Length: 310
Length: 269
Image (cartoon, rainbow over all chains, first blue to last red; front, side, top):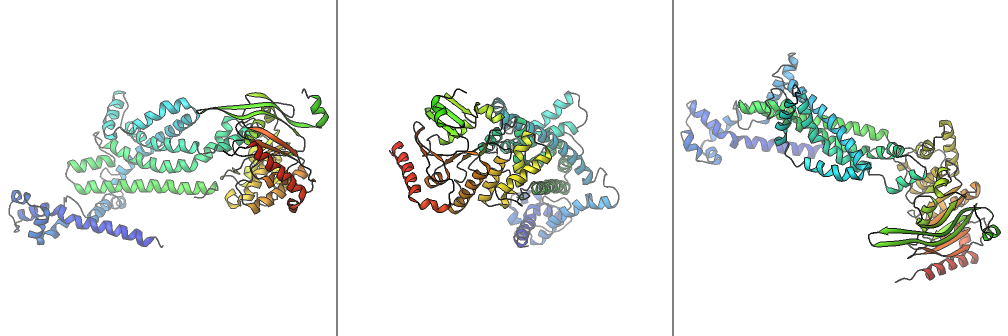
């Protein structure tokens, strides 16, 4: 409870800042609309107004500032508008039994979630396998690790269309596979790095001790290295699932996809419906938060079971 | 084995025999002679301490006995076998300075670790865990996790783990080095009692002169560059050793000889 006050203070500050920013962001649009509706605005005409800063426009038209908070297509919607749009496209539709309608963010979120989970599964498996290979083979360490690092320096937006085109060339139907690959591409790396560290966590004396028992390599892996890596694994998984979600959304952006949160963001941009963009952005953030929280809970339960409560 | 006449005359039942043992590590700064011409015989039931400054090879010698390092020259035998064979025969239990208990296993689970690896039956594992927990005075702590125990208790648990599979030789590498003096005294007393009850042969590496003199039947004084033995002292102290034996003239005489040996072998430049 003691932490509640600072947390709420920060939240309130962010929302307040957001509300304040709405006025300058929307003043031009508000004045354009007011002028068209016949109201008197200074200066008249969109062109002369362009020469003035938003601050001077607000000073000259204090009466119109409020209108910026009620626009249908604002540059920057208010938190309340975003919340309402989010509710309209999720909860309200669900209440009317249309949760899986093409206009519902639940539907699009589900599409994104599926690809995210496939990508996460693929990326995590590759990351863990890669880490095992790296820890057990110096050759793999020296030959694979540099490429893993290089792979993360390539912007995913540049790579995503190539993966889509390539998978289409290979005759892979639909978007699930290429999206999962893009998503896996982003999420394998934190898992790889975390698992390498985790598998190497046991001290030299721990490994020596197993040697005095004549333990086999497999026994050392199962009884020592694997359990040692669990805390590292969970930390990586939390980073990894967020990266997988970003990867999926990026995979939905420039690829002509029509479903998924990424597609909603792009379509909202093309059709000039900022509320849709913001609602989709928030849906993605909420989804990411939920996934990370879920993994966090899983981590707590697992570590407590293992006697390593963090 | 080909025991020499000298061995037969003086030794009853040698457990460890090292002859002309050399071990040179190749490092980036050139070769380092960790052990040079080390000759030592450890008899059954001996409590042998290895004492000397850092780099004198005391830990290395222990590791050679345990087949964790392999000598570059000379011979060493454990129970008449090579150290590698002795390991396969579960000849020794090893205790490191860090207790090294697995945090995800209970104390009982930790003691079971070697038993699982060596393929003991499940019922046998339980039986042995209870037996060694009793030996180190940790009955009732089997279900606790390591972090719930003090440092001294953790180290006792790690000794129990080394005893679990009935190794005849206990190799201890500064097992109490990280503990405070009071806990250390207590553990030294307990270790002596344990040694008497189990009749193990113990190799014990330490930095502490009082610890070495208090515990050992034989004290091996070593010196660095190259790592070698400078003195082997057969302790005249009786087997029964209360803590205040450390104030007796006999004890102080042995301690003095150890100190002399350390000083002679070690140029403080």
